[in-house]
Image 1: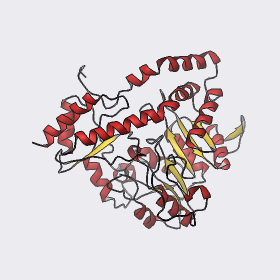
Image 2: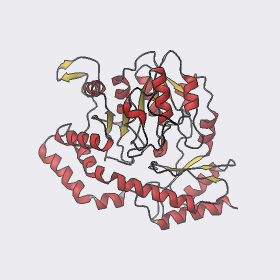
Image 3: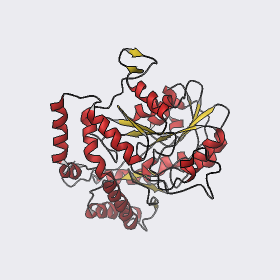
Length: 388
């Protein structure tokens, strides 16, 4: 790409700003000789617990492992059904299948791209054991309604927070005073961060995330001590103590260097998320009036892991090709809903909103330190192309 190209994500300014702290943290780990788990991981888990407002945080090797281990720690097993969205990265559904359960795909809300609670309620059967909502693109799912459904049917909820670290849920149960909620803390959910609302939350620290490491990393958050204990066992081959394995587990331990990097970056996550929200608002203003472009809703809790528009009128692929020719980063998240992937093609699923979204969505360049001039350049090119 040329010097004038615009990437989809550029973290160089963030890295430069934190360079001294990051370098010191990495050197500290190298000199300690403790490279897997250990004090750095324990410190990060403690700070993550404080930030999220949960009792337990368990560092693991990746966001995918957080989903798998989270499901198993919550008791999901062979033959169970887990309701989830088809409009997500494959890992969400893959984790359900890999624990022996069956993903049940229900359609999405066309505005938020998240699970439609009405469709979730319809999908509950005697085999349903869990709901796995995804806070897609950094927008919190309809957690009050989802938790109400879970409570009514005695289901567990694992939140997929891979794209939503720091996002805050802004809704609440209409008229709810806690009468239908099994736990007092759910009587008012407004303002809670994602990952602290369900029975557990699964996080990814892949480098591109709002809170990203410099390699793979993940975490399970929960208020349930039993779930946390099971997760800690499962991340270390299923044993509380080495060589005393009780269940079949995994080798899924968070690296100390990644934890040290996350310890440096965590205090800045709210500031960077606010910058993302500001950039999203600017995009919305710059793209106002662009023919066929539907901009995302900007809510206080949305952290815009991706800034994703709809391109109506069958012109998405044309716009995508034009941006690529201009060396402007762009991406389709996601071109094929999970229920239409070859691995799940035998599923009988009706999800017209997810299928329509897959044909129309396009994510534009977005990062915290993005300059206004870059956004203006991107928006101007889009407006000129779409208003022809």
